[in-house]
Image 1: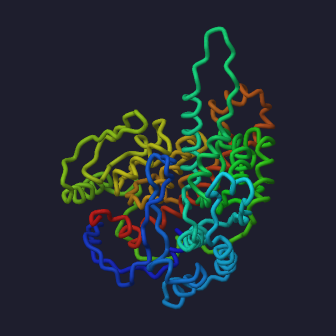
Image 2: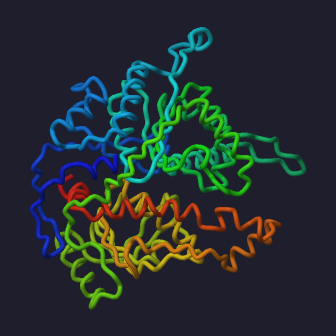
Image 3: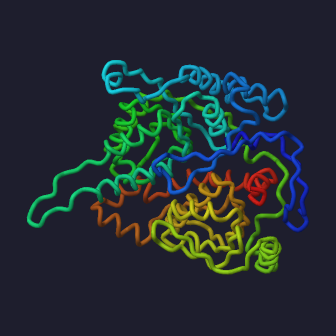
Length: 469
């Protein structure tokens, strides 16, 4: 969807762009984003995910996503893209097959004797900014299934691990001198999720964590057996998932499972719609080398803070029993440094909480991200993903332009050498693993740059305004 927004006719805004502020918005087109909150019933995520579905009218107005897409093109809100159309034609056929589908049987006997065969899912992959999320969200808004969930894949896996931890904690304590009984929580977790959703739509399906990689086959086999249908978007084809990851040989069987239950469709028009020329929301990106840059950012923060019903002060957020303190905030605006957000051991749940509390975040002193800062780069990627999904507006100050932020220098730091030795790997063998090469970070950072480019536009800035909510 993100890419689709980029191909939309830019909305007109009335604002104080000379002061880098937008105080009031006037849309020259009917709103085409109906924002809805979606989350699993039993706390699948610590916070509901807000996603914008590209629809300006109730889904009943159109027979399906393809008719909706044609309408948007006819009205000049989207431009024709044959690659998008081909994908949407398939999704439109799937939408009709899904009508009334449920993996929940009404009674015990119907579960035994009349199990409905689930439709096949879909895995859409292609370059960043080509419209994958937009098309999936169009499909999601029109598919007539009562229990459907749409979630960022990283957030989904975060919740899966929380569920696993909860189930393990609920087991009886081992008695002294006795062996604990083996307990596998994956199947019960899959059963829980299956009761909550017949259809799961995943945005940004990617695997970079070995803890995720090792459980995906068992988790998804159980989900598929329980009749859950999966629609996913990704920048990678299935065969490239977790490429060069640790113990990948144990992950590879999952790829076969994914291909069995989901058809694979490529969307790659070669156009990154997020980077297409659209009006900028004033100046939101600053180079550290600019004259008086800190004073300029201080002034911009003060101008925004003036409109908040609060004072500038440190803020502490409660995340899973921990306190995450930001040194400078006022109302819904936070003024942070890169070190504050990415040098500390923060993760997706922390960034989701920040995204919920703040609608505008300053990020100062972003350094060049070399392989020596691979951990910080991963956090930065996760941070921007969370901000983008929740329409958080950002003001950035960095050492170099966005396209030059991540540099793959191709050498290991001392920490990597220690890990290589601890794992008993040879240096030559380790050089091909993504955990040491930074390949995953380089790949993911293309998406981050694309998103940050869109996040500097008027359209995104206006969508992120929560003052009227």
